[in-house]
Image 1: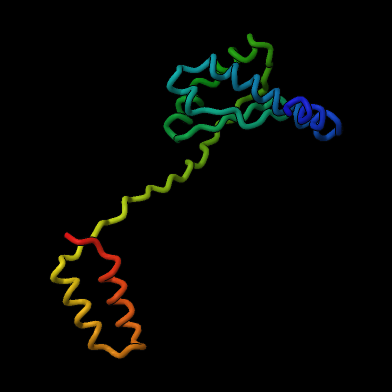
Image 2: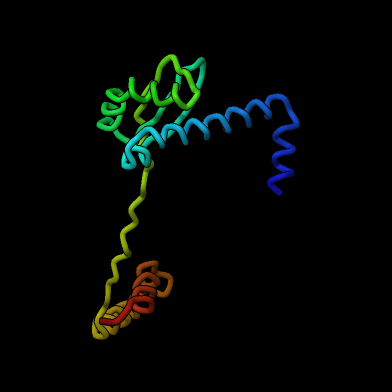
Length: 144
């Protein structure tokens, strides 16, 4: 399957350039990972390379400041790896939004309360929405 995909990507001129650029970015990411401390490498990623300007995204502004301080040594590191760069731009990426889902609150109803709900619902008219809601509550609620 991947060979078919590689053949398809290499077929068109634009797709071939895109594939080459993506491969170049992967190689640059490997070089970047080798030039950074391990805790930094996990939070930095190569975003783009255009006109010998490398763009690196970080997960936080504090790390971005630290990388800006490291820019001269990073440029030397890339030069020794065979990538002469004019400059390195550091961007702070927007954090991935994580949705924290709380566990649903489990509410219980005592057997006496269920009985009272059913009795009160029986006093309401047959077509009453309140009656339907009370009967459903008594039927679906967990007992304490």
